[in-house]
Image (tube, rainbow, N blue to C red; front, side):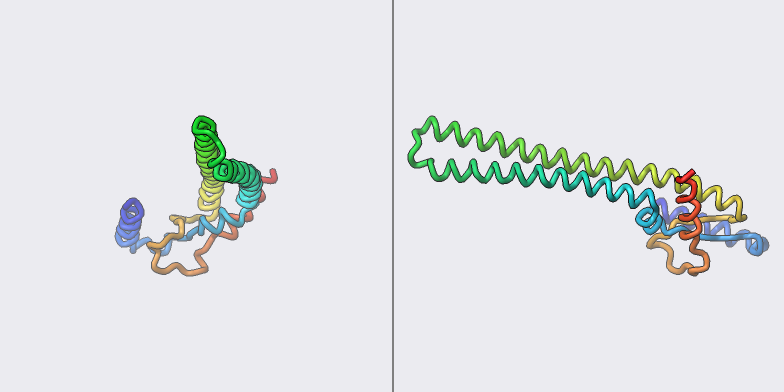
Length: 171
């Protein structure tokens, strides 16, 4: 909805300022590509992949432990008295709940970190884009999205902005 309103406002501004069309300079940024190919984006992916591997190793170990416990309950179940079997089944259920909680917490933590990394990168990218736009006389710089039916590749500023963004990070 917000994109439609912004696109409509842009169309109104452009239509009402056709007299000044020579003064209008437009460009766009492919933010998804910028996020994925920036140095900060690559570092964030590496950090997330390392965390994911750590969690996956823990999940695999916990799954193996649960499988052993379940097999033990099933194999020994017929030979155990009701109290002991009930205690083992209760232990299994508790460990299963802990496992489910752990996987949910790990998933939430990874998603939160991904959102945090993305937000920080976008904040930095936004500053660079604004600076680039002012310095180079742009009237509008848009984010490439599905509502853009056509955009000339000449108006794609992604590479220029990426170079500036990466250079600013090194400072």
